[in-house]
Length: 139
Image (tube, helix red, strand yellow):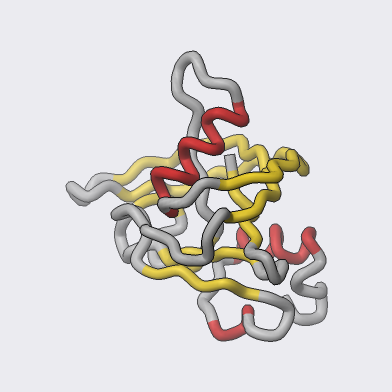
C-alpha cells in the first residue's frame, strides 16, 4: 500500500529514504508497506502509516493500483530486485508532526508551488502527476 497522506491544507507528505536502504534509496517518495497475514488492505495500510510516519490516518480513499520492478537495498549491503504491486490510498494525517521510523530520514509537506525543491524519484513524480500536483510540462 502507498499512502498519499494529506494535511489539513491539502499538502501531500513525502519522505526521504536513506542512501543505500530500501526501495528507491536516497530519494524523496511516498510512504507505504505490505500486508501481513490475516490483515485486510485497510488494516495493513493504517498499521504501516503508524509504523512508518508515527501518526494515525483517517478518511481512507482507495484510488488505483500500479506495479513496478525495483531494487531493494538492505542494511547488510545486500540487494534484490522485487516485483511490487501497489494500492494507493489517499488519506488525512491526524497531525502534521510525524515520528519517522528508520526507513526515512526526513519529511516534508509539498504542494504545487514547492515540490521542485526535493529530489523526487521518477516513479513518485509519475504518481504526483497522476494526482494533478505536477503537470506533464513540469515533470
